[in-house]
Image 1 (spheres, rainbow, N blue to C red):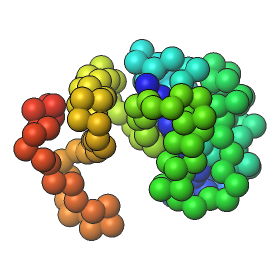
Image 2 (image 1 turned 90 degrees about the horizontal axis):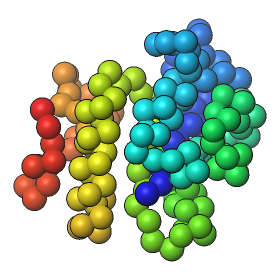
Image 3 (image 1 turned 180 degrees about the vertical axis):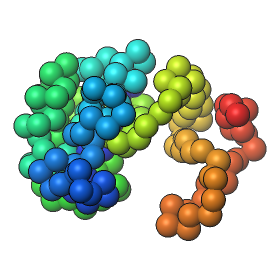
Length: 166
């Protein structure tokens, strides 16, 4: 199993603290560690650092290598051009396919705050199990607290609702 961490932020959403040279995922906002370091720490009980890929832009690659010494430098993938989520995932999938022909891939944002890491890992394990059995795509979401049409909506399929824990 591989994890892909999308770290292509442009530093505009957490202004004034984040900037083009230092987007949100490179900042220490919640703890002494940066958000990307927390993301990697959160998943390493499940996925070895050799199987973690970080997709980023050229401007942030060095900072990520410095902040994430446990991730092999070959696993810091530089996008030729930032083209958002689908292109980022496709690029990472191509890299994984070069390494192994058929493998599960978990895709994570670099900048989410998750309070209960143990529960999060349980959900990831359950989702990976279902994805492996069904040879399918699993999307993990949370119940919204308000309407946010910019993010879209997720409708659960009946066959997988059992993996969701309230």
